[in-house]
Amino acid sequence: YGDYNQKIDYVFKIVLIGDSAVGKSQLLSRFARNEFSLDSKATIGVEFQTKTLIIDQKTVKAQIWDTAGQERYRAVTSAYYRGAVGAMLVYDLTKRQSFDHMARWLEELRGHADKNIVIMLIGNKCDLGSLRAVPIEDAQEFAERENLFFMETSALESTNVETAFMRILKEIYQIVG
Ligand code: GDP
Ligand code: MG
Image (cartoon, rainbow, N blue to C red; front, side, top):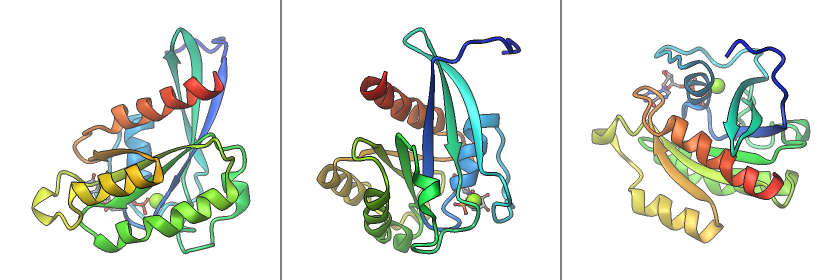
């Protein structure tokens, strides 16, 4: 850190999609800044955050885009998807509806994005296990059928957040790098 002359080998654009309030912005701030807020307001203004890391001795800058409150179906513009090499489809595992909407978010993503895009399904808020409304088996089955990577995370407790982002970045690197 602090080496501003660092040479960047790759920039990977990753987009976050999914219903409002599933935790997209908190996953991003946890990963990029190791910060979490319980009363996060609807995302304002910030288009993306970056984090630079090393993969296979190469310097990779992850540029992660967050929807600025455009989570209604078809409100996300094609500019958002343009150039993305990875996507995280996020649902809240305590909200069945947010999981049921994954199919149409996926359809929308596949309609806009590059066909080689790496997609990861994320069941967030796994710290709220007693309120679980989406069995892990349902998500695994959907992920397998649709050829997605899958992980459950908690932005609140930091569970699997780093692991999930590193996994998708390494998969992208395998394809692009
Ligand atoms: P977004 O609309 O998808 O960007 O969702 P936010 O990131 O703004 O999060 C919505 C709400 O869920 C906020 O109150 C967050 O504090 C909360 N939240 C986000 N991630 C988690 C998590 O992993 N566990 C719990 N318990 N709450 C979370
Ligand atoms: Mg948000």
